[in-house]
Length: 371
Image (cartoon, rainbow, N blue to C red; front, side, top):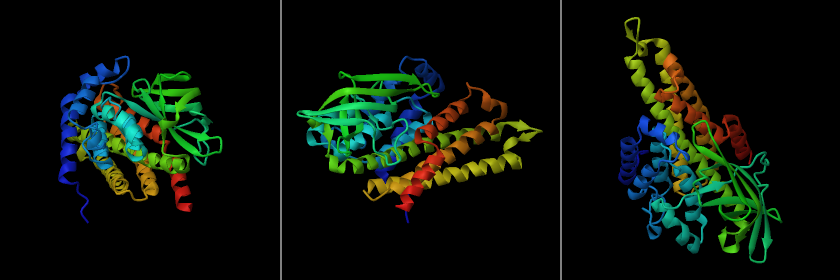
């Protein structure tokens, strides 16, 4: 069986690698991190001009007409450079659901701006103390001309940059709905705080926020299925980011242990270091193979909840082990917050936390296998 990417997919990945590699330097990252919004606007414009922000958006709406596989390849290259742009929030959590479930009017209004980078959106699905059945506690009350949304969403990425958010909520009857919320509307409060990677996440508070009827995605009968699909897409997108982060961290570490000498020879020649690096390589291969399977099933519209959960678990556990091992193999240098490997450690830990941690993924996978 051939697991290689197509020529077009390789071209997308190579273009993304070139733009991220040419643009994102350590000095530039420090500059952007010190900014008030931690957003590399110039890089965002470059990605839009190159067509990479529209890679999973149809050509009829200003995109390149590819799909989720190509989007995840872009995310992998973003992770490799720890680039400070909201690709995951705007494209995986918002644009992808719009492409899959949005009406023609919704797509026409929002997708061209998302493809060009002129518009940024995000997804607001996580809640503190979420129920085991996955039903949102945020409530959508039906009105004559639409809905009133009330509730609180947490860990909302790029909310300080976004104009709209896709919000999950339950109706009075207990059905799940997805709604396009204007973040500048009355009743919306965005409370942002910096994370350990210097990026921003927000708590989104909604108090009787009016949402027009035509700003609902799909219908309530399919709401839970849509939310489950979004969770799978987000899980695999996070795995793509983590794969890029972990692969580059291991590359940096391999170069370091090949050059750093102790007792007259490179420390990479010591058995303990070689075994530790080999363990990292095994973890990376497991992350890569599970990511590829989940991405393929998503792109082929096949059931993928289990595969997405497995890819997410490997992103959590494999990413964590690689981050710790790479820092450890650097010795004292690994504790230097100005040394590049420290930034990869921070990104790995944040992605693990965003994913919910390995234990929660095993629980999710157990539920899926139990049926």
